[in-house]
Picture 1 (cartoon, rainbow, N blue to C red):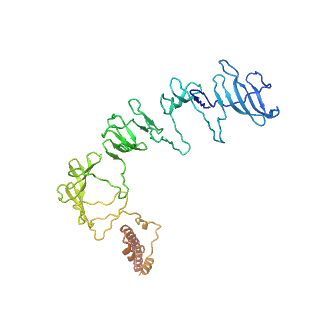
Picture 2: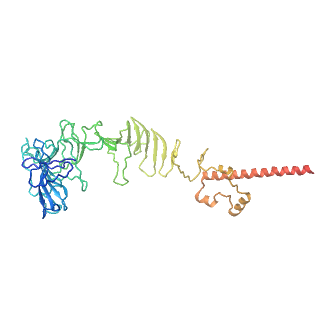
Picture 3: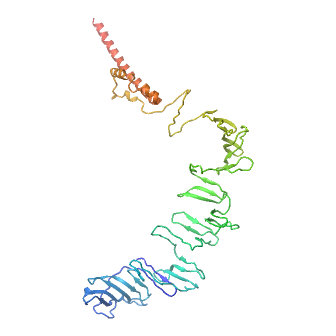
Length: 478
C-alpha cells in the first residue's frame, strides 16, 4: 500500500504511514514471557475468559539482526474475543509509528479534532531561523517536500515540492482562495535565470508564461499579464516589443483564432460581432488633413473613408471602399448628406450602380440574384421583360402515361366543369387574384392536362379507326 510520512523539523519528529496489509499475530499461552514473535500482555474486561479479551500488547516479528524485529504492537479485540486489527505499532529499528485508525488530538467536540496550542519550532539542517513540516519517503531519509518557514530571515510561508509538482484539489466549492492581509493581494511568478518561469496545465500543449515585470526601461524579454491599481497603470497585457513579430494568440481548442500583435493589429478567423445597441460603435478617429483610415492585416487591403473620390462630385461627403496600393478598386458613397440623395456604387472611379433616396436601384452591368443553396423570391409590382425564364421544379406529370394511371373520363370532366366552372386541379380565378400564380406548379398542371387530352385523343382515334373498319366491312357485304 501507499506510504505517507510526516516529519517535523526542530523540536519534535512525528512520522505517520500506512504500511502493508495487517495479519493477525499468534497468541502466547503465557503472559509476560519472552516468547519470540508473540504477544506478552492481554487486557480483559472483567473475567479472564477469552470472550472478555479487549486489547493485546506485545512484540511481533522475529529479530533478524541490525536492530530489526521485536517491534511493538497494540491490537484491538472484538466483544467475542476475536482479533479486529492493529491500532498502533512502533518499529524498533527506525522508531516509525504506525497508526492504523487515524489520529485525533485535543478533540473539542465530536467530529471537530483540534491541536490546541501546538506548534513547530526549529532551525532545520543547515538553514538558520527556519521551521518546516517535511514529507519523507518510506526510508525516512529522502524528503519529497515541505511546508513552513523555509528561507532565512523571511516571514513568508512556503509550500515546497523537492521531487515532483504541486497540485491543489479543492473538494468544497471547487475554488482556490487567496486572501490578502489588507495591503495587497499578489501572486508573484519569480524570474528563473534568463527565461520566464512557466506554469503548465495538464492540457496537452498549453501553458501560462509570465515574466517578472513591465515598467519603463525594463528588459525586452519581460512579459506581463496583470491588473494594477495605482500610479498610471490600471490593467495591461504585454509582449516584448511593439512590433507585429510579437503577439498574443487566442485559441479555440488547439486552433489559433484571434491574434493581437504588438503594433495593435487584430486578426480573427471568425466573425467580429457588435451587439445591436446604440452604445456599440466603431469609431474612426480623425487622421489630420484628409481621410482617416482603418487598416486590416490582409495584405494590401484597407477600408478608407474619403471626403471625395476620384472624379466624383466635389460635394461628396464620404465613401467606403476597398483599396490596393494607390488605386481604389471599388467603393460606395452618399453624394451629400440630404434625403434627396442615395448611395452610389463605383468601380474605381466609374459609377456602376445607384440606390437613390426613394428606393430605385439602377445598374450599368448585370444583376445576379440567388445562390446555390436556397431559392430566391423576387416580387415586382410592374412588368418584366425577358428573353428566357427557367423554372426548376419536381413532380413532373410523367405518371399520366404509366399503366396504373386512372384517366378521368370525359363525362367526369364534363360534370366537374359544370359544377366548378374550371378544369380539375386548376386554381380558381379568385384564388389566383388573391395569392398569385405559381408558374412552376401551373406548368405541371397544364402539362398533366395536355397529357390527359393526348390520351383521350388517342382513344378517340382508335375508336374512329375501328368504326371506319366496321363501316368498310358493311359496305363490302352489300
